[in-house]
Every structure is written in structure tokens, then in C-alpha cells.
Length: 387
Image: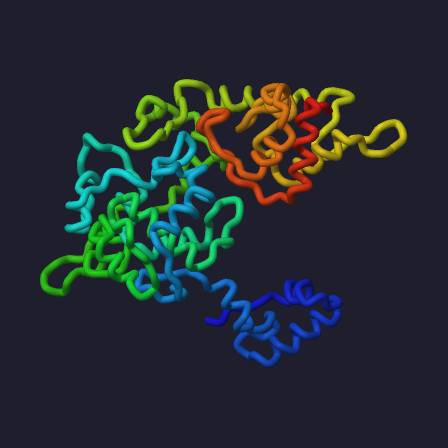
């Protein structure tokens, strides 16, 4: 089936008037009897921009190559702040590397997945196809600039990640020509199964030679009794499920710093308190907000302008003016570096390069804001981060 572009989107993208867009869409729809009146066929260029996935048989894989050494440089610049220098991650992200052995590379099955004494689960322990790694890195990484890596860079980063896991040697150059060789060394390449009977195949249909077909272990039958009249969907455990299997915070895995929620406390008891303070402070009468405030003459104050700039570049997603969110408050940063003679240049560089360790293990990824914007924010911090 052809992918199609709706008439309204077409009008917006090509900058036509509404009347022209409707007329164009109607004409295109009339020309295609199978989809009368519904947009137009997508162009080859539109499909190419959308169709970037890479299948396990490597269809869709672009030509290119990258070495382990090149991947290390890219990793340290764009990946290590979140995933650790050695793929060990930190208290926010799950580890990518660990739990695999040379024997796993030989057999294609990760033995520790069945070892109750080793409950950790890293990416290289679970992933069965190297195309999954390549495709995800290509589409989604780095998280603050997805799709910004070139094909050669994706090959290099993938090669370095597999090198960290002992899958590829230090001098390996990964490419579209040898990726099948890499697949043949993946530790869990033989770990996929259809025994759950949820995919088409023999377990679902039976062999036809006396082996009965199996049913999935999840039947997905609709329950139509005792339904809530106003169901609510949220991103936290419902009250009836809290501590259903014990306190998650006491069941941390041994691989990486993976922390479960403290289910012995009411939902959000700690997180809400941490966020509520700066929000409440901003809500006080006369307090300026991140989008800017005006003085008596109606012009925007310098501090408000910088706060608006910080909000534009999403700095305020992790930093408040005078209360801790994900990272330290702007005033904490200002106070720590107040005595530095090079505070302006240091903070300008730190805003753009990011890093971890100065305020704990939660990383701040490198930022892509212009140098001038970074200098304005840094100068405001040097002046004390005043509202």
C-alpha cells in the first residue's frame, strides 16, 4: 500500500492557499480511484526521508564504514555523558555492556540470562540482531540531536560498542560489506524464540506432523465486569499495585546502578517535594517567570531575557533558578563558581560541552546552542543568577 500525504499537510508544506490545496488534493484523489478524495501518493523523496529503518536481513542498510578507534572518539564526545565511558551507564540509564562472555560469542546464547545469581540485563545480553543496534543509534542517538550522525559515524559507534562487549577486536573496521560477519558474533544471536506462540510459525500453527498448535500464554480477553467509570492513565504505579511484589528500591540489579522506585512511600512523596519548591517560589506575587518579565517601563529586564533564552534551549527542563530539579539550581552553580577568575569562559564551555561528575553522576549532555547564547547565560550566572 502506498503511503499518502493528507490534503491539509500538503497545503501547509508547499505554502499554497487553502483553496489551492483543496483543489490539488481533490484532483489527485480523483485521479486515484482506489483512494478517491484522500490526498495524493507520497513522492519518492518523502518516502526516502521516512523509510530509514534497517531490517535484520540488512535491507535498508546504507553503504559506509567506521572503525573501533573512530567510534571511541565519537562515543567520548557524544555518548559517554549518558552511557558511561565503558557503557556502564549511571543511575539514570541502564547499562549497555556487561554480562556476556567469549563463550557466549561462540555459541550465540548468553548463559547468564538463565543464571538466577546474575539478575542484571544489559543491552548486549539481550539484543539478537546487530541491525537493531545500528538502526536505533541511527534514528534516535544522541538523544538531544537524533539523526545527526552520519552513516560512517553510526558504523563506528556500533563497532566501538561491540568492542566494549568483547565482540569485535580493537582494530576492526565495520561496514555494510562485513556486517553479516558481525551478526555471526553477536552474543545472543541464537537467543530469540517463538515458543511463546505469539508470532507466526510452527509454535503457533503446529508442525502438521502430529504436533498440535500452541496458544499464546496471553489470551487478551476483554474484561467487562467491575469496570471503572472514569479510568485514569498515569505514569506511576496505581495504589493497588504498590508493594505488590515488595519494595522495588530494595531489588536493585547487580549490573549498573539501576534503581527501583521506593514503593514503601506514597506515590511521588519525594519527587513532588523536590519539584514543588521552585514551582511555588516562581508562583509568588511579584516573582518573575522563565518566559520573562517587564519592568515599570514595559521593557523586558536583562535577567528575564536570559531566563527566556534558557527556556528556549530547554535548560529549564533540568535547572530552576533557586531550587534543585534534575540538576543543580542556577544560583547553586553561580555560588560554586563565584570565586573563579575564569568563570565566564569556564561556564560558557561547560554549558556547551556538558559532562558528569561535578554535581553527581547524572550527566548533562553536550548542548548545541550558539556560542553567543551560551555566553549570555554564563554571564548571568557569573553575576549571581539574579531574577
